[in-house]
Image (cartoon, rainbow, N blue to C red; front, side, top):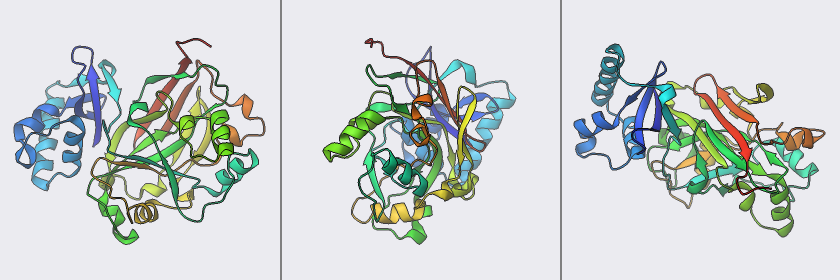
Length: 314
């Protein structure tokens, strides 16, 4: 089941849905009609999370509804929707940083890292910079080192606070794809100033997420997924989350020691080696207006982002 949040030209309000063979089935109606958990979910994200936490009986109802809509020729054609971030308004979006040994070396060589962490570390993406599949993201005026960072992200479906690594996966509801867009020259200045990555990672649209959520129980081991990054159709890198220093269980055990994570919160596992900054001549690989970045995983789909000129000018 591929869950998404979308809007249409006729109805710009966010709605939860399921993608089934290039047809989008609007779940907002069925969720309201069934009054899942005894109430109508208050927003699209809650609808999606409710579906993730569905009981077997509810699963049968939703599956039956989807099959009825598709078989009757109903639903909305995929090319008629606008993809929105599949988690519409997360309480927290934590990005694990410095979580790949080869990427650590790349950052050190480019003076983008002054320390080697001895435990998981991270930074926050702001909700206001989230963008969905197919979005256009402006390269900010004056920025010449815009880089891509393909990552696996996961969504919490059960409250996690003080949990052990051995029980962590029971708190994960779904996975999706994420592109941690980064302005490297700003990141370098932040490192030199001794601050965390903040501005470099939180410019408008710098958090493409999607295109869909896939429930964890339909994925198997998410660390074994193969994720590919392409720019203008050219493969730039390919990796598996198993290459990261810390996997989902270790990340959740570490960060939930003191911080509770609630349903709908997002955590990404960090970038692999091989982004633009890791190349012999990064200037040939940084993103420029007109580029299309695609993050792909067979089990999830493709998250595409088009880079455009800053409308404010250069």
